[in-house]
Each structure stands twice: as C-alpha cells, then as structure tokens.
Length: 488
Ligand code: DUC
Ligand code: ZN
Ligand code: ZN
Image 1 (cartoon, helix red, strand yellow):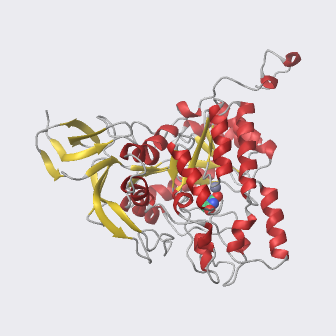
Image 2 (cartoon, helix red, strand yellow; image 1 turned 180 degrees about the vertical axis):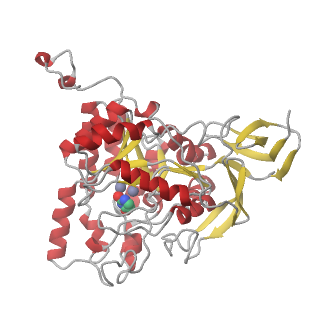
Image 3 (cartoon, protein in one colour; image 1 turned 45 degrees about the vertical axis):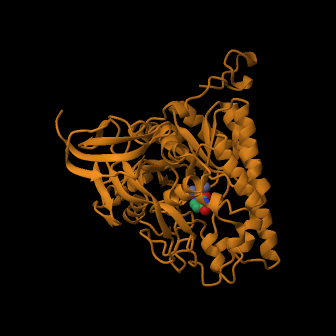
C-alpha cells in the first residue's frame, strides 16, 4: 500500500449511521483507508480522545450578496468562508441572486468570479430567480443547470424579490423540467405588508415590531401554499428557515401523506428568542432576521421536528450586516424596522453551537448531529458521497473536535466581517480544533492555513431529492381532461 500523506489515529469517527474508533489514511484529496493500525503517513495526527466528523455542509448562506435595495452584505467570499472553515464547515451553498431585469446567466457568472477569487471552502450555488420571464426560464436556465447549478430559490415575500403565485408555478415547473430542487422563502407577503403599514402608521417603529410584522400565520399560510403548488406540479421543494410550530405541523402532515417535501430550520430559530429584539434603542436590530425569532414553544417544536425527521437539516442562513452605515444603519441612525436589513451572522458558529446544543447537552446522538449538519444537506443537494460523510473515496473534509473544550463566545469581531455575534456570552462545550478540506489541514490551533481562492466549485445535478414522484395533479394528466395537454 503506498504511504499516506496524513494518518489521523485513534479518533472516534462519526458518520450519520456509525460511530467507531479507527485510523483514517488520507492520500491526496481523499480518504484512502479506514482501519486499525494503518501504516505511517507523512504526517501523523494523534487524535485519541477526539471526535472526527465530516466537514459541515452549510446549504443556506448569503455571501457577497447584493440585497434588492442595493446593499452589499458584510462578507466577501474570503471573509465568509474563512469563518466557515474556522467553525468546521468545509462546503457552502450560497446564492447567485438575480434582480428583476437582469440576466441570470450574467448573475451566475459574477458570483462565480467572486467565489473563485475568495472562497476558502468548496461551494455550489442556489440560483435566486426573481424575474422568471420565458427568456430566463426557457433559454438561460437549461445551460446553467447543465453547468451544475441544480437548485433555484424563490421568495414569496420581500418587495423586488417576491414572485406572485403564477410565477412561482412557472419556476416550480421549470425546475421539474430541468431537474432542480426549488428552495422557497415561504411567508405571506400581504400579511407582512398590511401589518407593517399599520404598525408604522401608529408610530411603532422599533426592532421589536419586526416580529409583530411577520405574523406566524403568514408563515403557515405560505408553507401550506408552497406545498400545495409542489403537490399540484409534483415537484419536490425545500422549505427554507422554518420558524413556527404551525409550519412544522403542516410539513409533518404533508410528509405523512407521502409528499416529497423537505424542510430546514436554522441555528437561530433553535437557540434564540424574540425577546432579544426587545432591547433599548436600535440594539435589537442585531437579532433581526426573516422570518423573525419566535418563542420557547416554537423552539421546542423545531427541536421535535428535527428529532422526528419532519425537518431534515439545520443551516445558518448567514446574512451578515454590520451595525453601522454600511449595514443595519444604512438608512440612518434611527431607522424603522422596515428600513433595517434582515439577517444574522452564523456561518462560523453553526457547528460549535449545535454540537453543544445537540451533543454536549445530551439531546441528540452524535450521528444525528452529523446527519443534520453535513450528510442530509449533502444528500439533498446531491453533493453526497463526495461531501457530507466519512468513507473511502470521499473528499477528506474532516473536523477534529475536542468534546470537552469549553469556550465562552466573546462579543466583538470573529472571522467573518459582521463585527458582532448574536450569541455573545454563551458558553459551549465541544470545539473544532482542526479542520481539513480535501486532505489539507486548513485550520489548526485557530490558525487559518488556506489561501483565498483555494475553494472549489462543486457542479451538481438535481439528484434523487429533486426527482418528481410521478404523481401529477389529475388536471395535468396527459391522458385525461378532454385531450388537453398541459405538460409540454
Ligand atoms: N432572511 C432572508 O430571507 N434572507 C436573508 C436573511 C434573512 O433574515
Ligand atoms: Zn429566506
Ligand atoms: Zn436566507
């Protein structure tokens, strides 16, 4: 057997299905052997007492993204992915965000350029479609999918981003024809704008009213509608960032009926609270995201949703804006909740926070932690088994955890560029002490050892998760309906 470049010895190795003590032999970019007493490697890493998991896969994060109002978020590919790496995430799926009137092809090319320049971990893209005219869906989309961009995102709310029902059906249908997953931001736009208008008319403008302006029933309604559309057109969808118990219940029912619906939640909805927005002055803006943070009962329902499989994964929805005129205060020092950019930083701390909340707390098994943070996102977005697992032939994306290291999350800059963390003051047990990406040690003792631009694009097809079930609504059945064929 040719020598290994690296051997990691004696760690507890965790996959979504197994937990065992072994050595890992790495050759080049991949895992070459898993066993006991492997021959020596050029570099030996003694890992007895440590845990090794697959590198995290963060399948929902906003990087170097322009908002609909023209505000650039705080992170470049370099700063976001160096933070990801420090936290044990070795694959990210951010967005290539179209704005109305622009070419999707050009948008994707621009995001590729930015990522190729800065990314430190590997990446794929979801394409945000805000302008699904026939030219985009019929002419631009197919070659982009063939080039490896097999997921779309659509918004049901947000001015200048949202698509009306008919357009959402067009997007879901195009995804079906071209084999893409459709990720959906599901909140009822009318309920948000109606409530926001009445709040502002009455002078309620502080960050705390952001929560009031996104009624929980608005999430439930839109989730139900999105599931209905997906069922009508028989196309799997991923419901992004669920925040309420009502939405979890609706997804639970749909999946129980055999519908191919996927759903995620995010770290902040599991760990933070609407009460955080209730701070004096503008401070609450640091906790403003959409959907908003909710309450203890919602958090419990989300945890149960993860435990019983209703929710398949946990993403960060990293969307960093600094607390200054480049970010949350871009519209002045005393903005209304409607004028504050939505989003929290979270790409770096997603895994350490979840390791603590899931594993160290005893709430979940290590295997489930791996499933929810690496394997399931890799599977659903068709990056598995290259990513998201530990197996011979898989990319050697690995995280060494010290399960007993306790860290208090400090306020102040982390490795991203948001300038703050909403988790300051929390004490977590379990910390990623070494991170490897494709066989290369990229973080060791807190030091980053990889160059910007060393991350690699991961082209992918839609895979199993994006495949229709074969059960179209009867109205679309080509063999019925007086010969009307609606499916060409
Ligand atoms: N909500 C979104 O829909 N996207 C980015 C961040 C946020 O809070
Ligand atoms: Zn969203
Ligand atoms: Zn998002």
